[in-house]
Image (cartoon, rainbow over all chains, first blue to last red; front, side, top):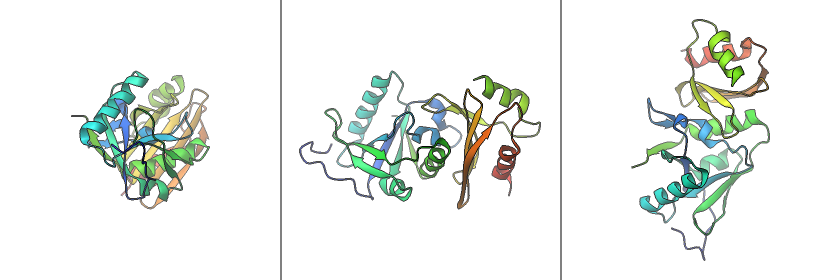
Amino acid sequence: MIDPANVPAVGTEKLLARYVLQRSHIRRSNQTVKPDAFMPHPHTDMSVTRHWSATEAELWSVGEAVADASGKTLHGRGDIRAEICVGQALSVIADPTPDNPNHANVAGWPTDKPRQKAVAQEIAATAQYVDKP
Amino acid sequence: MRNAYVFLTEALPLGFPAPSIGAEPDGDLTLEWHCSPRRTLSVSVSPEGDLDYAGLFGPNRTYGTEVFYGEVPETILRLIRRVYSA
């Protein structure tokens, strides 16, 4: 994981993980992630975890903690590139927490739901689904 | 939930493909018609009867809101057809 004392800014080439906590957010027919998983509402930002300096085990450990905190089940994650978010006029801002130095927020979402859905679709179209081992 | 139920069981005309059903973080049910990452339509059904939709059709995107009065708006039907058109 990233050194909490030295958290770099998120570069556009970096991979981000969005944890999938609802089975209905996965298209089982082709193992892809629906845009529902990339909607920020009811929050204003969308939480992600940066891959940078994280092992697979660490990424899954964070995912389990996220699921536990929300009382849900971790099914997998959708990996996206920061540059895709930036291309949708969003900002990816490092936001380390005590339990997750790799935490970041995808911010700058439109305020109306249809536009949020459109942005989420663009992000989901590039996402790579990874099933929980 | 009732609006989504009526949409699926009574309002969607015969011959239209059934969508995949999901839910967004705000609790609204979502209906998705999907052929590929860039030929896809998602419609959220709110308890108040708002249909918030977004679609990707190749390089084009469309989004907006229609109101559900018990019949599927022609805008939504046209977009569903567009997902499956060649």
